[in-house]
Image (tube, rainbow, N blue to C red; front, top):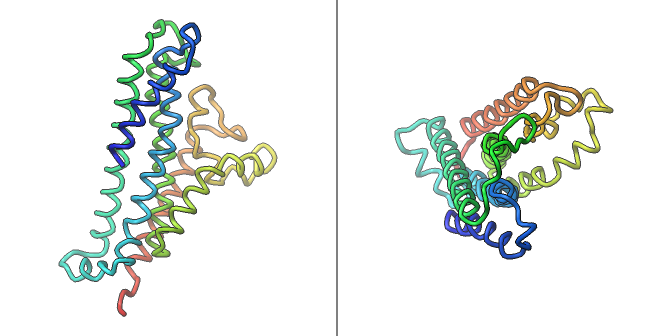
Length: 237
């Protein structure tokens, strides 16, 4: 997974360079942004696969009993699984960003320092955009981890998480907070925080603090469900 992500993160700028006419080639930051947009989908899929198999895989292979007979509490076992998944997601994100930036820096010219995106310099905007994309990945992985822990089905966890990843914009358009007041409290409405980089208001006129609060509540619920079900589940038989 890591090797494929690294290779594709390097090849994407190369592909942009080869397929674009010299006079129309993007600058370094634009190439970097295009690579991030494409590769973060793959990064999310890889992380979702890891999160989905973290707990469900132990039940599928029957190795959960070997873990539970060790002198560790179920909470510690679940925490170790979750921390491993988070560390994997951080590692893949760092590798993706470094490789994409390195390839873009070598192949494309650097734009002028005066070029702004909103009120941000292009470098600052790109860094903040990575953070926003990672938060979306982080929430999607939390959903996969929760489904894996509650239903012990990695296939369901992967399928549901990927469905949410690809369909969230459709749900946001259908259940627009501009038309429905209650839609402001839906998870899908707040997963993409990048809109706050160019505007002080999000969907339905909400603030960044409101969006973060909604995401934090959903995140806490996902982890609480995972912990409660895993801690009380009977693995006999």
